Length: 323
Image 1 (cartoon, rainbow, N blue to C red):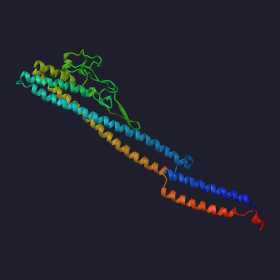
Image 2 (cartoon, rainbow, N blue to C red; image 1 turned 45 degrees about the vertical axis):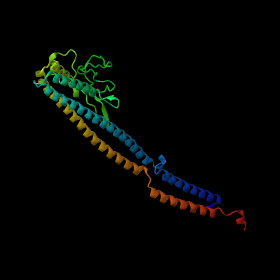
Image 3 (cartoon, one colour; image 1 turned 90 degrees about the vertical axis):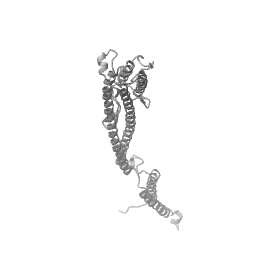
């Protein structure tokens, strides 16, 4: 049985084909203007799931990179600060060696004592160092000074609680600040003040406990007092404790250096991961511009051809049939 094709059916089919062709052209134009081949989920339902996953992983990786940058800044600042503290201890040792010389006059000892006083106060400033407005050596209590600025010259920080405590009579907070530098991996980026400057000495400590302590502030305080009293034997014995504390500072500085090296390795790894994720994301989302332009020109030619054919198809009218 023959199938009768009407003029209306031909017109409808023509319009449908032209509409489909324009839809393809519109999709190619979107790709051309955005540079992406996936502009809505229906463009590639499978590809959009991978694209969203890559974006999520890139966001996480960028956050880890920011954490790494913050960690490096904190560690480098801590390294510099501990180095400054070590310089003070080295200068203190030199002064104590000079002070242990029995040939020095009282005026020379007084001059050494004055410098020790200034070194004490400078060490307190280092102990209360801040980075980005946060205390470096007070664990998680980054808003509180770990060491009251009570110097051997009598200066008192009235904000200290209580204000009459000296730096060697307090201990810093012992909690670590940990940054997440990778999925499931956290690294402590701060150094506890007690580890660098020594454990605090309680106000009720015995004389034996005080003399056995290598707390930085206690050592400087005792050095000042010995120079005042002219206790050269005590000064000689104090040098060994200064050496012990200097070695401890060097150990902590080496620990910071090791962490810096590790964080830099993590940074390199995150950079590589970021490059790889961007590469696979581009393969999934980005359009091949050469291919898009070629397809666009092809569709334009098809569209022009369809319009030309359509003009021939719908040209006959009632007058044409009556001829």
